[in-house]
Length: 457
Image (cartoon, rainbow, N blue to C red; front, side, top):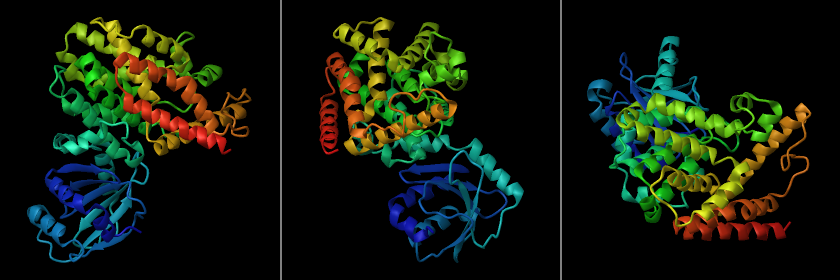
């Protein structure tokens, strides 16, 4: 059972910021390992606290907040919320209940001056509506990102960025920061509240599959941001290119259900019916849905772009996402190599530059710190095995590498993937953009580690 002492010990430097953000009627504070949302209840001297990702928290319990435990923080809380909360001079109580939410382990807590044994059904419904409709307080997210220390921004401009060390809500704020620092002060017309709403909606369209999930989308989006932040790359791309890349990468696996294009075709899935015989089922669905979300949520941008720029944006999104079809991998690698030093002002030329970045970002687990890349590789393998299980159940031939009853050792599998898939793309991109030396060094280090592990089998 988590205690207030545990929160104090683990998040002490965050407490002040959390308390300060209670100044809004509804607000969110997001950081690694802990997310807390406050909502002042209109009928009670209480503050609802909605939290996720706090390990070990057991709901449906009442926790006394003793003033001696958090004296400074409680003093701030009392002073800042005097009118709403009352002059608190004794123990406070935290009552928690589970609520319906798309998130796992979702609960709402009510800080109060007296023990509350239960919430009424109407109160629970109200809270659930708040969570579903206002998962992120836009203004607070924007304020937080705008005031990030330079050191935090620089951490995001590195291949060493670790998606393994952040929770779902921190990933959300990270993604927004990538958009903000790549596109702010450019000629792309932006309503940042609409960008936040767009990201929040995109998140809803990722499934809980082992690999092609919101975490992978975050990982790939950070790699795109890292690339476009490099001076050689930044100078080669227009601001519309960068914007299209970020929109595309966050949407590039929307509604992926953990099955390959081959599986969708073999089962004649809805994705396969949607794409027809000539288009890849997954990528076709991803790019179609991406454009639906852009049209629905980014109305300010679309209203303020010229018709030609609007057409360019949608063309970029379409072609960038289609380039992640691995059946066309060699085609794109060859095309990148053939166009080294040939970037011009044409849309087609800029589409290829964006595709080169998107494709490497999609395979960026090979260029991360080894321990992170290895975790991702294990999750992808498990996703493949789950497809193999489905194929076995349906009486279909089990796809190569997807039979958990006849597994390929992970180091052997990774060596093949590194050498015969990512390496050619990485070398082509390095020649095309004239950078990525650190990424290449990390890739080579990872490959050497896998080769060492393979020898130990």
